[in-house]
Length: 269
Image (cartoon, rainbow, N blue to C red; front, side, top):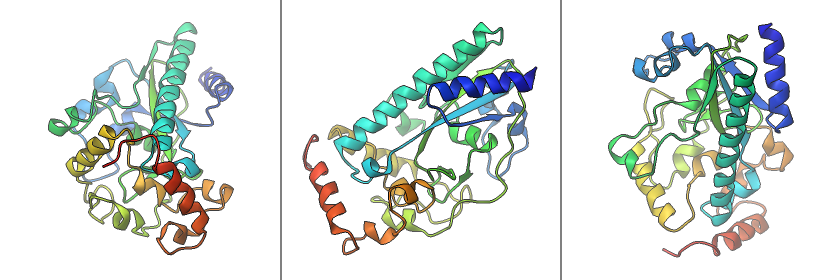
């Protein structure tokens, strides 16, 4: 029954254009994969003791749009993807509940505003860790989850369900190439240059920079996921030559296009 239910869930997700999906075991949080780990209060079973499975879904961020960051183009795409994630996760939770398996979704961000993060720089649940346990990717030096298809250019959300489903397992091979591009390109030097979670990003530096971009209507930043070489989407969009992101790199016409987009739709500094 559980295998058939999983198939139905995946079919339902596919009908809503979700092709990045996995299932995590809530008990996996009790066997930390890293020496540095979150408090137990952030575990799925603490948030909802009846949780038997965590379904994680992801939507990709289009690389050509992201490349114009910071811009109104990426700003609008980011909002669109976030909205779609919440809507699809809600529909998936209702789908399960109507079949007799109590379920609900966790919002994709879980915080009210950037100012809230100044004092408490975290949400009540981490989707990227859920995605890790669901076998969707591994962590990179930019502190994000890297996937095979899209590198770190993915947004995630989760559904808690009382249905006990067959679980996926974390990937065994690390996807991060340790190229250090994310470290070098971060505009506020928020990344420490060590493997996650040996050293965590400076969340306040990142938050403060995003607050400035938000005031100009061109948030978020996204530089660290833009320059990551991991992801099959680079083949799709002919972006395997990472020198394209250098000031004097090849394909100057691309940078001209990004500059044009950046000139419109947001407030000037």
